[in-house]
Length: 236
Image (tube, rainbow, N blue to C red):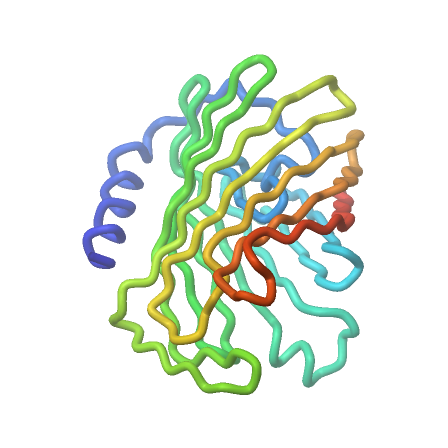
């Protein structure tokens, strides 16, 4: 199943690789909603620094047009923490035509041999943009609450995401996203996350007030639990 999904992504990249034009105008923060990536990439030679709740920091850049690379880690930046939490990412926008864009993405955390390969499709109109993504998750060693959860990389692990953003004005936007996980891991209770947010933005800054609603089968959590946090991005 994983091979089929990856093959479809590869075929999409080949088929649409010649399409270049898009009607979408990039604004600071458009490369993602709360956590869900969009198909949009920053303009060439742009760099952004994003903070998730003043705990996780992500540095992204577009050295060449439509290719965005990034690195994220947990604060403080001590060598052992960076080694354990450092995560690399790349997103390649390969299709732009009118209101549609599509991009392939990959995320890799070396310390736990955690990798995700996926694709996201974005459609934009005057006020709304809709985003649909899916991908395969490859796990080697997953540790949850001190218990080793060995997850063979051949097991079928998937992630699916759906999001929408409403441009209320040039300075404000509202968005919501749903992320569902399908992992063949024992004692992994988190099954979905539904998030919403309010984004204030300017040419170089964006600040999000996000509301996280993770859903779990854990009896101690009993379904949904909601809590807010701040996300900020600076683009230069």
